[in-house]
Image (cartoon, rainbow, N blue to C red; front, side):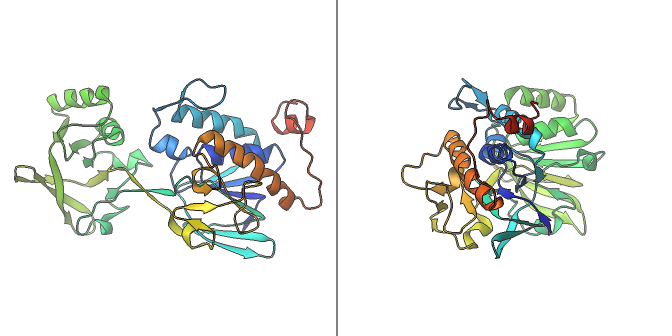
Length: 337
């Protein structure tokens, strides 16, 4: 079981800034997130969407903000456990233990829940037998593109993920892009490149249609799709990649005995602690009088929560507030000295 000062659940902007606020106080962090990369909603739902309310930054995208935050927290060497969900928490004396979906176990005096509005999970295919092919020949994300080399790929979806991977994987695989509508939501430039490849016979695009069955024993051998006009077509397929977007689930958090109001956690606005000592909620998932669901509000919340985290992690030390511009200790932690 790995020990640290604070376990942060959620690697969105607020969770990342929590690493910074804890780090300048000399506290170490472990960050756990259900997604396979840091950034939360910013990176998963609107990486290219402009954000206008970050102080001193007139405009940035979700991706740019995430990259800057990751750069800012580099000196603190936080450990990230991505594509992993917290399944269970338990109190042991003054500490909290955490168990994850990958059987990792951690212990810390503090837990900061920065999980946005819940964990993101892929919207799965709802047809018979789909589940038994998962992680064998049915995937909802690409983590190692070598796995899809020299295969017959059927890619479902109409957004950027589907279009981008169809374009990329067509370099060394036979790709069929399938969408339920004629119109795509992805970047027009990517779609035009795919249309060009279709004209060259390197990619097949099928619309408007939906999958109705999967054939195969241990691995997928083919799929059947049905067009809006009723026509059914069978397509030889080794691997399905499905990009039907994400759904948000509160998950096990709802079972941890915290004061919940619908899908938010009640906190006090002094240090953003929940009804459990040592467990804090910040960002969109927390609720208190006057709460505004803004990233900058989340930054303020973790700044105050980190003070109480210090007191719990270092009970024998007196907390001294210091400005980053004048504190030699903080500047050393930031690698400036």
